[in-house]
Amino acid sequence: MRHRATTAIAMTAKKQRLVGAHDIPSPRRGFRWRPRSVIPHLVLLPICFVWIYPFLWMVSAGLKTEREIYSGLSLIPETLRWENFQRAWVVARIGEYFVNTVIITVGSIAIVLFSVALMGYVLGRFQFPGKKLVIAIFAATIFLPEGYTIIPIVELLQRLHLTNSLAGVTLAQSGGAHVVMVLLFAGYFAQLPKDLEEAAVVDGASFFRVFWEVMLPLAKPVVATTVILQFMSSWNAFLQPLVLTLSRPDLRTLAVGMYAFRGEYSTDWSGMAAASAISLAPVIITFLFLQRYFIEGIAGSVKQ
Amino acid sequence: MSIGTADRAQSLVRAGSPPSGKSLWQRMWSVRWCYLFMLPSLILTVAFTLYPTVMSWYFSLLDWSGFGSDRDWAGFANYREVVRDDLFWNAYVRSFLFTLAGAPIKIGLALVVALVLNDASLRFRSFYRTLFFLPVVTSSAIIGIVMTFIFSPLDGPVNMVLLQLGFIDIPVDFLGDPDTALWTVVAVYIWKWFGVTMIYWLAALQVVPRELYEAARIDGANRWNMHRSITLPLIVPFALVIVLITVVSALNIFGLVQTMTGGGPFFATEVMELYIYRNAFGAGEVPRLGYASAAAVFFGITVFAVSLLQGWGLKKANTARAQMKTQ
Image (cartoon, rainbow over all chains, first blue to last red):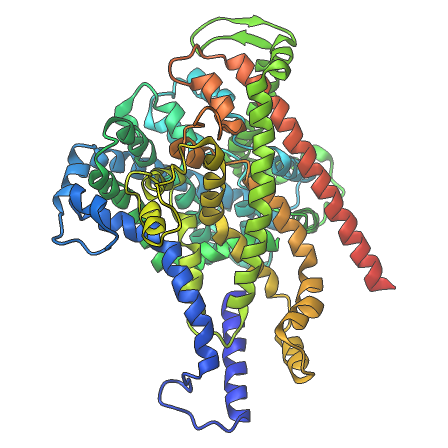
């Protein structure tokens, strides 16, 4: 991984500089608070505070009373009003929407991962008639503007009798070419040694078993990146779930549910802040723990 | 997604074993598993990307008021109506205005932050990177709702701060005033997607060898000169890719704008996606699916042309660079 390599280089560079300067290593990993090294932090810290202020405000407002929200800028509530979260979960039906969102997200991750990994495997390791055509189709989709095709997608799902169902939303969320993910898989599989499959085939494994039991487990980093990219896109999707659940409020996702909730209870700031915090928490927590994969997935799309 | 994609695709074509002298059918039969394996991905691509594109051309020629109702052939009547609609042209221009205002600021600011965070001697770099990236992972629709509170004229935190600091005497209705609404949305858009562009830049900056900076520092170059003569020339090819991706992504902002303003006040923030949505699904209006499709196709062609133009410019730049290398 390039990321790790650069960190290693950076660390060696730092060590060399310290040795060269004849510094006496201080107990804190050779770091000392020189005025020059503090200045960037004096600029960056306030900017970052403003940057994440909306999230801090959201959590804080979710724990305050209405009156407190309107009366001052302090982020610390007088007492923690957890009942706001309880109210959001029950009255705003956030609990129900949460379950819907989980179903759609998990379903689309499974569909996308399965189809994209297979496609990447075939493109990365095999030669077959028609390969150029397949690649041309994928290349063409790059230039097709997305987000302006919602009407035909609804029409297609209607013909398949999948509108107003979680299955329809899941399928719509899984649809598309996913060019970046396919290329990540294809590139990864292409650089694995050739004899991997040959050994397995000699052992009598079928084509699919070679893929499933030998190749896919080897591609864990790409699997992780794909899962995270799709998680982000499905969990946060808005237009498709909005349109596909217009006549079925019970099938709303968190984003759509929040939008509807705002329309009905626009004065309940603390309830809405609490509901927003519940909706955003899973993706933020996942990001904080697995950010390497998030960032590699994003960076991967520009490096190719 | 970028130009390199084409090169990657080329190298993929060459991967695997070379074709033997057997007939086409025999060769296809011997790798029948490949076709089966590609099926799921191809179905998802065709059904949700290619088919919708082609069908929206067809739908744009229909008079069609709602998914359950009849479709009548309308020819180019929808297009004639689209080009005569002032609201369409306003939304059309606004979409490009949004991009022209948002994308350059986002790209420029993200480069500055990336250069600062790329400095290996800066402590807590990954901590700052995490914070700058955080809004990216969150849901646009929910951010849009939270932002209506943050910018609210009724004791929203932004107005409270501005009042306390004495910058304003009466609260500003950022999202309710047609003069400020669009710019407020642009600012939130920049904030929301800033992290993606920053990560692109950080990835691009990996190509600059650190020894070059060291050498320049020994030669006594200051930070600005160093970046102007070392960093910028090396990251130019990435810059073009980043501009392309950013411009296209600035046209996918439905969730944010719909939840922040719903296109209002008085259509002041109605960008193209919202215009299409309002005509096709808007509450209290007769759905006009053919008409909305015509607007979508019209706008889609413009976007397609813009990205082709950019792709062409990119290719030009790459060839020029290759020539410079060989000379």
